[in-house]
Image: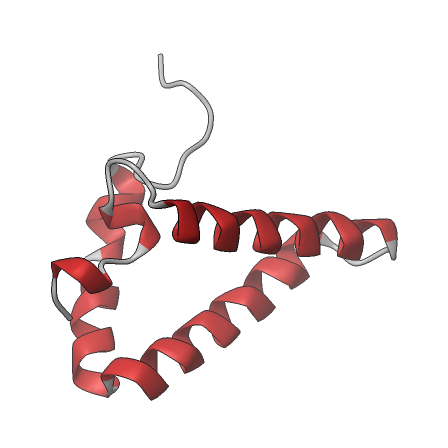
Length: 85
């Protein structure tokens, strides 16, 4: 992967295309909730679909390397939407 292929959490400002993609995913979550699907179930399915797409695009090694960086990003608030105190 190169800087132009950075994943959403890696970008300080999302490009218009990536912002649109995030909007589609957010809308899919909202629609699924209206249909009675649990957010956790949707999140797990979305992660599976996302990793499958990334592996198809970049290969297992590149995606495994990216995934190995996730614990630190999660712990540092890289995926948090609420303000930290």
